[in-house]
Image (cartoon, rainbow, N blue to C red; front, side, top):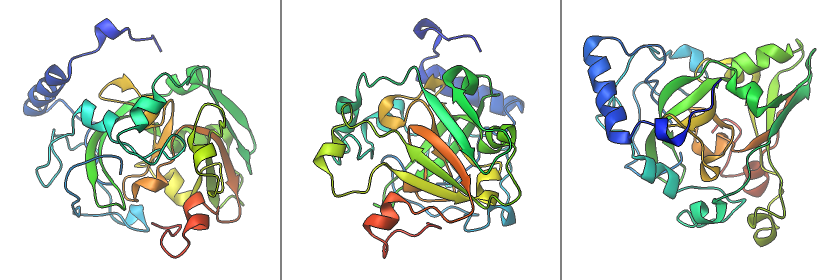
Length: 272
């Protein structure tokens, strides 16, 4: 995939206007507005239909498209999305994350995918860019009672997993964030957490078409504060399940114990 220079990036107001025109012409289709689930601030809302434990039971039409969610909330701005973030590896202060993460190196980068697979692969950034990139508009919902409507760019996790050829006995997928004690001050400031950040999904959740590996938003590469260069986005779950800056994915037989399940087992469940 050709690298896009900054001069080629469409300004946000033009991006939104073009989407409106394409929508009116019936052209904008193919996964452009799948609605649902936490990273930054507009009023928290309950979605209809909302996916719970079994996403396949409530399919979302991937051909729907809009600049708003189904309750009328517009896309949050690029500034909103990139300046109010949860990323404890840097800090617990949502406003300061962007400042502390500025310039954090995300290239080169590798994601090791293994465990119960026939064909373990280490994916480079170039490998990730070779996947067909789609736009998905999802509502990210946080357990802290705020949400944001975000136009993610990425590809279904299922396409990545298909390349490693999962074994039949694999029932869960375990994800791990980078553990950089020098470049990320949160590891030193909050040593009581059981780092690195770990999350997990059932195999059927991971293979569902709505589950996204995101590499960008608003047509631009992800910034470090948003989980660059690649993060998970699971729209029917709370935002803490959408692990950022992934370096390792393993297919396993036992339910992964996440960082938050260790920290507060009575508040954070696997199926959140």
